[in-house]
Image: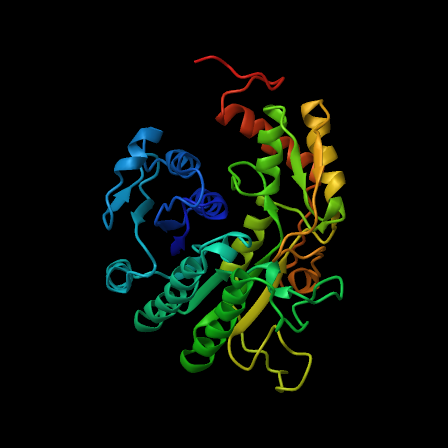
Length: 364
């Protein structure tokens, strides 16, 4: 297939693009490479995919120009904002995609408290542009990133895709719920198969610098205290990046279908009389935050000093994914353990940021 993957300078998108290429698909990657977090990590992901040769080259990527990877001729990349409707429509018209996986978004729960406009621009305006581009260019297979944050004030665990998600507690979560509603509308009106993916606390090599694992590892190596919110009384369904990507691949290969048993009555939230579906992709095994920190300490061979803090606005105390639909429909369940996943991340972190295996900075 020829697949557009938006957010390919991002964490999940860069891993997904490589997996698609490895199995022989043609991929066009799109990202605006914003400065929400360290752009060198984003450039590093693009370098890994052969879009640039050095991190320094990343600063000179031209806007709106389709670049071809120097490692794989089946991979092209374009720096573009989803809000740029005219340029996006032109890309769709010229490239004629078989499928689209929209992972581009303004990320971060806490950032949405201080920069709400960024979420409306990218996650709402950008997403309607993706839907319109699919509609007008006969793309019938769309999957997109939602988030476990949509569960909001729901306290019924594990989180099921058939639970009510009408009580988000951050604007980020509200935009992701909005994406699901918008997608359903286009599935119903135009027959576009849309699948929303509620990701649960994704971690692993090339991860996001604003996420806990990255922040904790950095602080530990710099002998600084870490801020532990909700006094450590957090449960998170940490999900390793390879497990996430395998789930996304299966969704791309199995577009949403009409649920012939759907009757519009209560309890049938994740399917529809339209070709629409919602999946949780999580490890189905919530881990205490303090145990997650202990996995980092085990790998680094050192204790990390902790600054215990109250829960932050927009955070939920626990996440736990019910993945029964994923197992039933796609015969798949994430399975990589937290300790193995943390070990892989820290090995990558030490290499990328120039530390030896004992966590000592290597002189240039």
